[in-house]
Length: 521
Image (cartoon, rainbow, N blue to C red; front, side, top):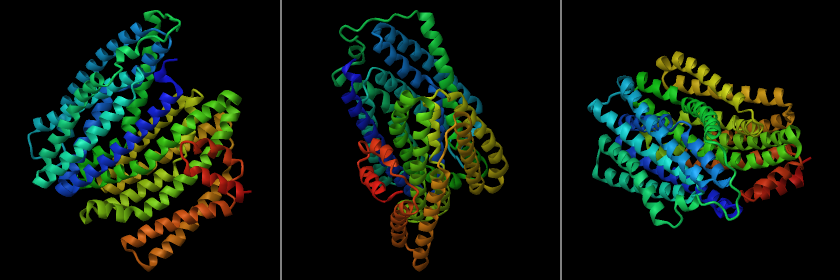
């Protein structure tokens, strides 16, 4: 095996990518906070809407190509066929260019319906900003995916970190100069367009180009495959990844954001966007981090004992996810007022309730990740795609009925309904078709622990509702939640086995594992 795909190299790559993701998120959150304070709710809502639309266009432009190029370039290199890997990369690059062109033309066709509410500038400027930023980011993501296929994970980590920090510095400069919406958006375009040349410069500057990485390992047998057979597999994989990507794009609060812009105004888009960004920092990053650890454990168990063994791991993981989700939900609700008001200011008060709803919904359904991991490793992707597609249809109907009339409240209800549909149907598929037996009594005990801890925190807030007391109540909730979950016997000593698998990547888990062994049933 190439050293670039060896165990130590992959471990370092995981640390690099994870670290850069958190740095980029923190820098992006800081930048958005500064922009929000500089522009005010109305213009910040337009700013957030343009960034959202550009990001959605990037997903449409690249659809499933980034995943496909990583998978097949890596596979061909592993089989000792670097020439075929380079040829496939060039062919998929042509597909991507065609996709970018078609997506751009599609944007032009529907442009009048996508204008941000209250946009006073020329419509052509709006189109140019969205298109330029999307093209730059789409080209970068495809290029960095090719690099990943060749084992170059460091390029993404470095480029993302550098540009995230550069964006923060640019925002600080514009805020100090008192610049407005258009200047902030032009900075966004400039940073987006800087992605491809920075990637090219890093590839040239750092040793080990993609071509060198494509060289076959010494002694590696070349396992030839006909071009037609390879492309048949590529097209099949690409078709499914396109479906999954487009479903993911539409399920990521896209319908609600579009309708809020059309019917509720720019300020409401600002409140909704802030809640989405802060929820992503808690629920989404926690979920993705846990899934990156859980899936290898589950796949290993699936290899050892099939669906039965993977099902037992899933049942234990659901309990852990439910505990962490409830912990995050309670702390998020209690810390939401000081977080939003201290970071963004009093003018963004409506975002507090939006954040509280989203963090509760996301925390309560965090175990969807455990169910999804089992479906992925057991080749049930079709069922997972169908569930998410159904949830989009449901949320679309609910959003069309509620958002035009109720604005932010309707968008939150739509988000609640779609998330619960995915959670309920995914759980039902796992339980009924795969025979997974959940520990319902222990899940109820965890929920009871959360309710009791929440009641204690509410009593504390009854004394004083200042920012400091909200932060203290969050700490109290977390401590009581951990203690009560153990004393109510929501855990079992066998749970330590799962936690030990996480301890290497999450050292604090080791202490909680020992706590369970000592006090649980």
